[in-house]
Length: 122
Image 1: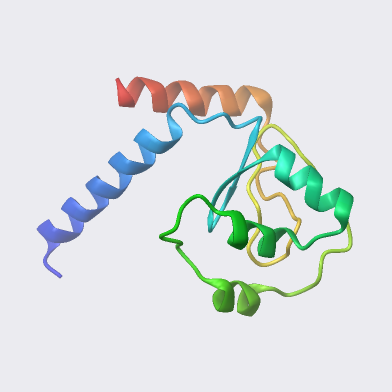
Image 2: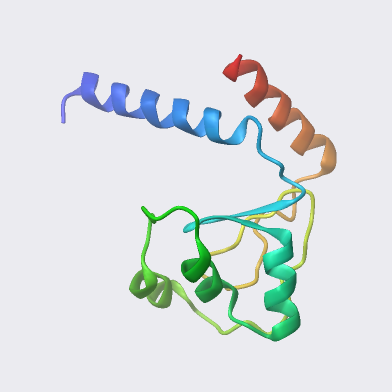
């Protein structure tokens, strides 16, 4: 790839990222490799002891998944032993199921990030 093509692809990727997440409800949705799911779906999986990643693959609204079921299975290190814990930013870890890799983001950090995305998008 030529340098100009890489720059253009990166720009388009970042533009799509900003448009997707500038109005995103970080407190009510969970980001996964397979798409976005609601906190309610996660609560149902926790309550029914259902594998969260398999539920995401079944119900994902994004039909052009970044990864498929085989890739999800190959990523997994351990079976979930605890429920997914909600924080200010919720991102499902593709390797250790039910781990929230967004848990360290504070409410203030989340608001700054959201405000920055909204400013870029406008």
